Length: 112
Image (cartoon, rainbow, N blue to C red; front, side):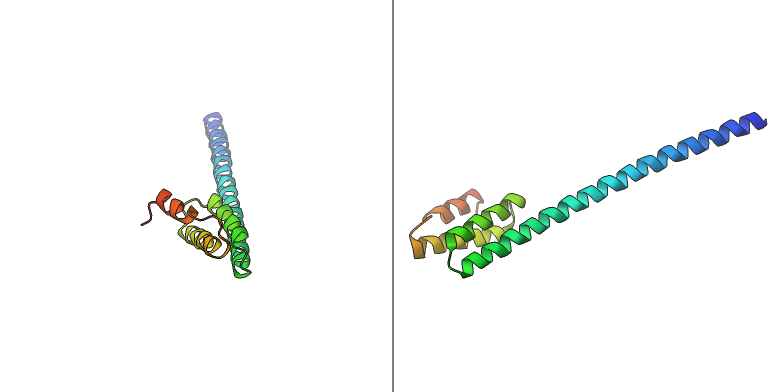
């Protein structure tokens, strides 16, 4: 009887260690995902703010480049998309460059 109880306790301990290991692995994976998301968000914010700085300096081509990088991080982000379209329009109007790109971009995102 004592042997059976001992084996049962041993199995319970082993099972508990296994469950704790799996739980720790899940927590570690979630922490990695959070870090990756945080890293992506940091990049996205940097690209947007850098694009805004270029835009305010009237360097529309450079601003558009940064906004495109922001869209690479979050491909369907409406804010980055709007800023990129605005940079293309300004680049066309003031520098006669990238004309038609904002229109093509709006079509590719189905924006009327």
